[in-house]
Image (tube, rainbow, N blue to C red; front, side):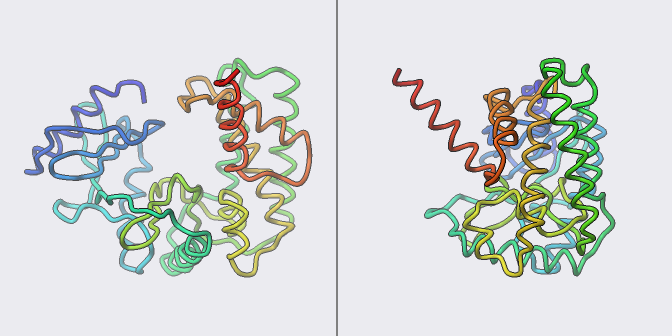
Length: 293
């Protein structure tokens, strides 16, 4: 989000109108949505441009999952659980969790994800399929106006991989259910109540291996009954999808283009397919090396 100042003003205005004192705002994350810690009321505010319909879906799903006892972040109990609108933005208000150390162990991470999947089978609300998200990535790659810096050879390669992997996964006919969609470590909070999953707007339907493709290898090792062939295909698909988004015009991820280049290189190199945290680790290592050169 580029208009951070106006977004912060909208969030603090909404909080103040609900008798939540918000004299200060700390930016926690900035991408397609802005995540803010408002103080002294200690609220987590998520802000997006108006018309962000996923916010309503997320609020409804969060309430259903909370009733099912799922390990997810909760909406702030002091206000009505709904989407607020202000000055061209949608604002949702969530419980802020003070981070704790040590970080979540792979075994606890896997157990929490298994509990989340079980709860999602119980609530079983309608949602988009994972293929809808693949099609979004395909549109970015296939439209030079949306990805003007992507070279023609890379565009053809990435388009081919997205299409072939989507078909291969569908052809397996695996059981599908509601998923988090992006349960990577950035969407898991280590709290006093154990690991909690946040950012539910990415939820979609698909095989659980699609979710597992976003987490570390160590977490996958603790998750029961994994189809490793399907996991390999989902892992490749996730690498290709994330690569597409890194080349989208206006992508705001720091060092995003370099991330996209590393993802393309990994897809071309072939198996074993790296996890997203492995790619991030490689880039961090390169950055440290360059910093000393």
